[in-house]
Length: 310
Image (cartoon, rainbow, N blue to C red; front, side):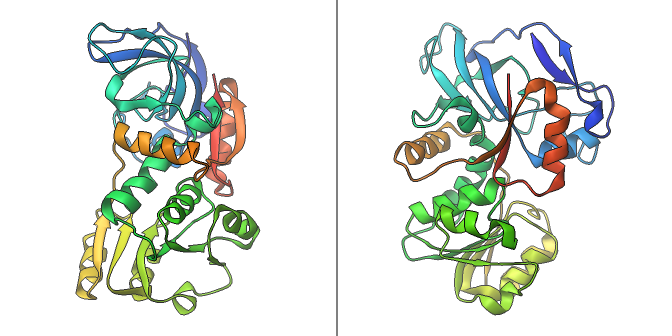
C-alpha cells in the first residue's frame, strides 16, 4: 500500500510516498481502507521536530481518518465489513493515518455521519473532539451561556462555534476581518477583529473562553470572564503560571488534551446528521500532494480544515 513517510525532521519537502505492507489488525481491531485523512497543525509541528511526539524518523503522520471497514477480527462486534467509519485512533501515539490502510481499535471509531462525505468526515475527529471535550465535558456549556471562541475561523474554532451554538450558547468570537462573514455564517453572534480591536475592551461577562491561540491571549482572556467563569485552553494546558493567575482572579482553569473517544464521535455525528454541525474543508488534495498540504497548514490562513484523499 502507499503511505507517507519522512526520513528526517524538516520542512514539507521531507514528506514522500513509500510502499509498505498493509497492517494486520490485532484482536479488538479492524482494518480500515482510508478514503480521507485530515491534516492538523500538530502534524506540521511533529514533522519539523518541534514536538518529537513520535520519536525519531522514519514515521508516518496522521490521526484523522475516514474510510471503510475491510476486515474485522473475530470478537469485534461494533462493526462489519463495509461499514463507513471515522475517528482519531491512538492519539498521541502513531496512528499512521497518511496511508491507504490503517489497523484501528474498534472502540476508537464511530460510524461516519451519513450527511457528509468521507472528505468532510475526516475533517472532524481531532478538531471536533477537541471542541467537544472542551465545551461539553470540561465546560458543560448550557443554554444562555456566553462563550468566547478564539481563532474562530480555524480548524478547532469553526467547529467550536457551531457546537457552542448547538448547545444554546450566545457565541462571541475573535477572527481576522477576512473571516468575519465565514464565522458569522457558522452561527457566531458577535465577532471581534483581533488585529484592529482589543477584545478585552469589547467583551465582558463571559462564562467560558476557549483559547486555541495561546501566548498572551489566555492571560488577557481572564479579564473578560465573569467571576467563576472558566478559561479552557487547548494550547497552554501545562502553563502553571496561567493556571495560578486564573484561579487568583477568582476564575476557573481547564487545560485540554484531546483523547480518542467514540462516545464523543457519536455525539458529533448526531450533530452533523441533525444539520447543526458542518466541518468546512478549504482544501482537499491527493495523498501525493502532502507537502503542499503542509505548506498550507503552516501558512496559518486556512479556513476550516485541509484533507488528503487516499
